[in-house]
Length: 454
Image 1 (cartoon, rainbow, N blue to C red):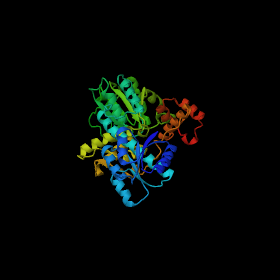
Image 2 (image 1 turned 180 degrees about the vertical axis):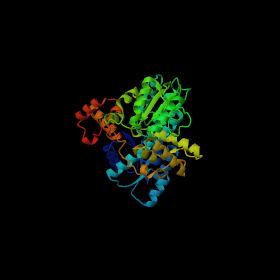
Image 3 (image 1 turned 90 degrees about the horizontal axis):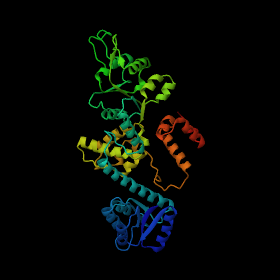
Image 4 (image 1 turned 45 degrees about the vertical axis):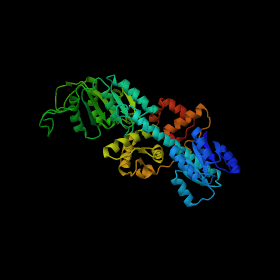
């Protein structure tokens, strides 16, 4: 229950307003003057202050100023029967969060208080995250404290100790190459080369030459012999990025190399052994590609010995703010700008936005904001329009009624499905369920067809 300090010297108004506050879930304590309010604030904790402008002695405006000086993160909502622009401006300048005209309707008062409490909680979260960025040790270069990322870090730690092939999946921009590099650095091959190749960036003939090398005269421009990436990665790790886009005709040659641990350069006759660990990544639904026969099942099984799936940023909760703060500090240092943090209004938008481009899009957003801001903290005008225009639910922090475990599970499954845009393969991985179990639960909970996709 949110705790409100109601400050007003009219006993009848206090009694009516206290009943109103309790009806929509606020515990209300009262004070009849600004001085009494300051004593109460020093002795107890409150989520929001609701104060009349006209009080005996010091005014509500004076109270706003004193609260802002001593409890800068405690929001004050000011009330007055004289709803003039001058009074509102004076209250806001003194540090008030919001302004309502007496007599306020129950709905208007509840919205003002809910917004103020949410502002308080988000501001607290921003400060906590600033401390967390300083205190949290990142996993290699990857920042995350969400349960989903902790599972990823644990799996990477265990997989790094083996020589097994690893398939890293996830949407574009989630950090798949960072995970590949973390696997390499934590393995016994850490002192040997890490070589990356994009399977989507070149045609089949060129990619084959890149991987296996070629002998002199193998094709028109092959004037000299050239070692391929398998040779360059000797003793280390070869990372195949976007493996799902590897040309179908080249996949059998890769499979043979992985099975035999030898390869034949383009135009060559001799099999050459190699000692390289293979990592691969894709942002495609690789199982769907196998079913559609655009990716070979035998290559998939050879690569998918260990599977590391990276959740989308929108499914990582407050990691968004933690990463945003770290990115802000990095870009501020690189540009020599004195930017310290993000305002609560910016934090709300960052949490509400869906981040289709994931961490890469967040990095671009924060770099832009740091470049454009005129203050020490990022504000709404510093954000791109797509992020700034994201709608905010003012009741997002409202108390939740007690419900059954089945309802909790159903709500969580629906939330995950929404986050992954209905992709059941991805949802089952995030939920830790196999697809058949997820289908049974969807049928049991009578989930609507709008969530059916994969």
